[in-house]
Image (cartoon, rainbow, N blue to C red):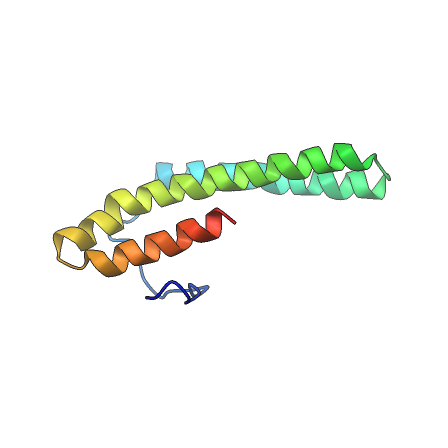
Length: 106
């Protein structure tokens, strides 16, 4: 994978180590809170709330999404990337990880 390629929306890959029920629940709970925050912003727009108040909430959602993403990225590194390195397939896994990290830093 070169630096110019975009990552596909669906790689077709599966995690090397399936997520535990607890891991799934933690991520799902986080995403449900974020979903609630988005609904809150929709309501703020409907109520014609002050722009700065809305922007503060959007910033909070961005931070929450990044936190959820970095949590998944950490797990991916410890399981999928580590496994690929041990199998001698680390270059592709590291390139993929770096590409997703670049997307997060935008």
